[in-house]
Amino acid sequence: MLGIIGAMQEEVELLVGGLEQAGQADYPGVTIHTGRLDGLDVLITVGGIGKVNAAMTTTYLLAAGATRVVFTGVAGGVHPELRVGDIVVSSDCLQHDVDVTALGYRPGEIPGETLSWPADEALQALALEAAHELEGVNVTGGRVVSGDVFVASPDKVAWLWQTFGAACAEMEGAAVAQVCARHGVPFVVIRSVSDTAGGDANMDYREFMPVVARHSGQVVRGMTRRLAAGLAEPS
Ligand code: ADE
Image (cartoon, rainbow, N blue to C red; front, side, top):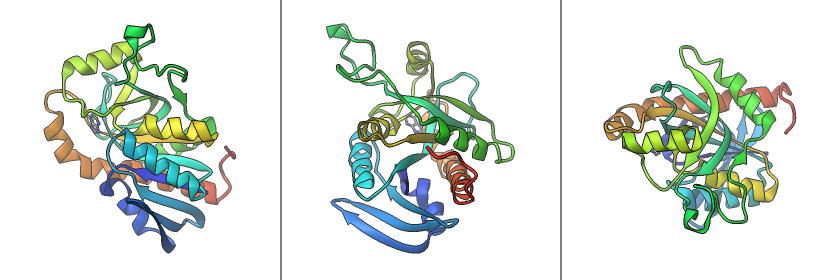
């Protein structure tokens, strides 16, 4: 069963609206929508903003029966060539705000854990294929970095690019990845660029988020169509 998470209502509303045989399962503070998209059984939820919310919601989603997970939403572009509206499919995720460097660990490294969590190759390929179907949208695969911070500074963007080779920055993906990896469940993160995380990020985000959030939802829908038709490799 495919579990789909967005941080905000705008990121999943089209998908929830498209559910057939819709139902819901309630967990403390979280509603999981159940039903079928394109004939495929799915679970869809709004996870809330930030890594703690994302980790908690992912845990519920797995308890509810998700056997693979897709995160859909918006991000701040970090790669210098990314523009508003572009799509990033995660190659891997890491937590850019983890700092145990004083004890000799690398930036982003949690002692005892991997530095980054790689996306499932089959889900990644499926997401890239579905994303390439969108007209006029540039698509790239790359590293998604997560932190409990809305990045709105050119210096921070430069640091994320130089330190991690990040494609984009957001606030949930790596937490979803970490929980999925612990459970051995394949995942991928799909992000539409709503801003380029610089000085104007807050204004761009407000203007473009509601529009571009739909792009990553459309990619998920392309994935469910393919999975339902048996066109995708199993994860
Ligand atoms: N999501 C969308 N834009 C973002 C940004 N600039 N920083 C963190 N998360 C974001």
